[in-house]
Image 1 (tube, helix red, strand yellow):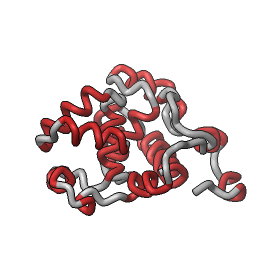
Image 2 (cartoon, helix red, strand yellow):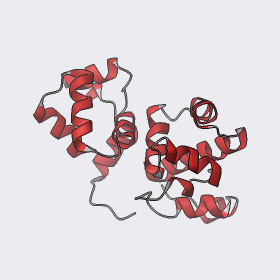
Image 3 (tube, one colour):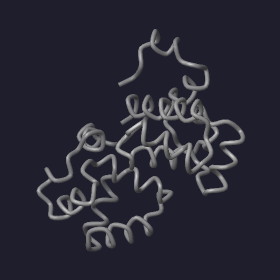
Image 4 (cartoon, one colour):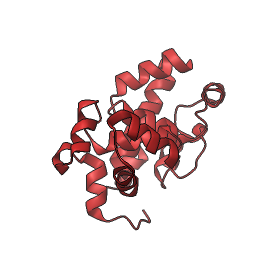
Length: 76
Length: 97
């Protein structure tokens, strides 16, 4: 599979524990049922990979700020 | 992890085709189990791409029963269509996630 994503990134999306990142954001996502990175990926896909919609969703869901949303997007 | 050729032999041609490359921008009708009629229903609901259906599957924590229930109740899928498509997405996750 052609990819420029590192194995670490892929491992994270496959089974990454968001709370394990130690981020406040990860904890909030987990509280709302987004306990794995692939669930957040699912949300991104359902939003048709629209970054603006995803950012809005992240803000509404857990009060993420702009920097956190960007980081989340970058990872996905 | 890629599927061994022996495992791939037991898959339907459609499933094999779906798993043979990344999901990209494939239309939803590419997902194994999605009939022409079901595809129309899904597209009407805005689910025109395979990756959107995958997203729904991931949102449901890859729970096949839950996904099948949703596909049947909300999208008019038959039991057979629901089972085939959830299996297809499960296999995709095993290959690519």
